[in-house]
Length: 266
Ligand code: OOG
Ligand code: NI
Image 1 (cartoon, protein in one colour):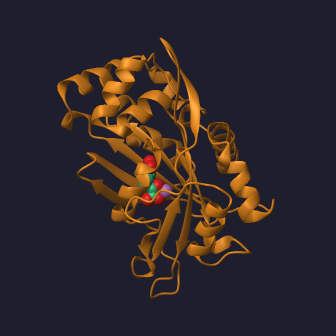
Image 2 (cartoon, rainbow, N blue to C red):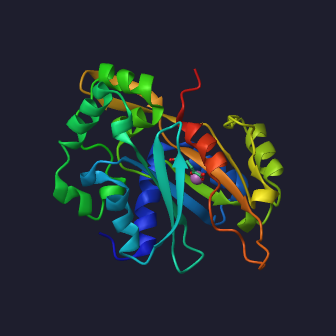
């Protein structure tokens, strides 16, 4: 596991921009090349002991991150936690896990078959959380997973990596309102996730969020290449709590919609 937070996020970012060609253009558009502060990143997994949320979380708690919140997504059949670093300028981390036993026997068998192929020693290696897929997958299996759970299909196809980075709008010198960020993105041709409205949340819940629809990448399956949704970019504006400090948590109703940024648009 990494011992340095900056090295870990630099490696996560290098993997993420390979999966997300739009990210560099969005950086330029919102920051004009200046450094951008990341509010958070997110990771996905299955609730199978070898690779579950805690296994991913270890890569962060071992370098000082603290468990700061629990979230439930009943319809999507998943749970999540968020982690914060004592240095508030470090990105927060949102990790979810799919509740595999709540799905069909076929899906359960498929997912266990994939996770059986993961070498347990790989899960504590420095690179595990940006190591991608550790198993073989064919097109029909991907399609069958997709029919039951978009999330299951995404993790099966793309494995372990940040599925998004998030621009902290509060730290952007040239933007204050999320409406203006969204407008700039749309004017530049980016497609926003409009599930539940382009802006998720409100000043009342102390968090407003929006996101692009995921880019597409070509993924190698055992029986050929397929172009599928990869990773997306999110934008977050936080509001102060009564004590004057910015709210640092997440909002489950909004997160529920952000997950859909990796849905296929067709
Ligand atoms: C995580 C979705 C939730 C947020 O900021 O609410 C989220 C995911 O897509 O894996 O990132
Ligand atoms: Ni997010």
